[in-house]
Image (cartoon, rainbow, N blue to C red; front, side, top):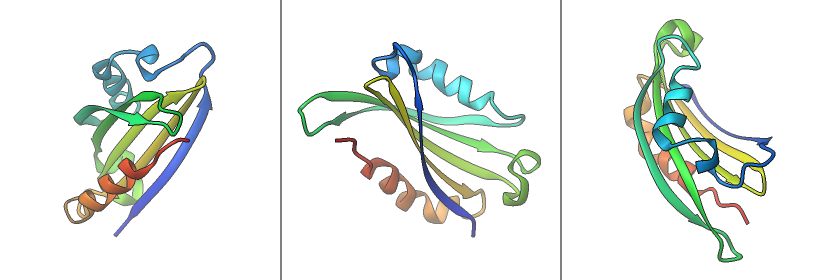
Length: 118
């Protein structure tokens, strides 16, 4: 079974929230179009409360990608949670092979949603 969990960050000067990068639908479409054969299979907006009391919007995007692009996975499912705070974008990405997604999706969703920024 192939499963990964990773966190990425990048500078997004002038962007104060994930909405500054576009609507949930637009961001999901951009992610899906990043690889041939990748398709959006879910999207969700949620909130995250910082210790300071500030509330942030989080976009969750789920995609599936076929074997040619996914390499040794054969096929894969990705769940991304994307949030912007202080002109930095944070992406938590959980990936599993298509064959194991059903078995591990609940655990990976919990892991992705457990990330909080203080």
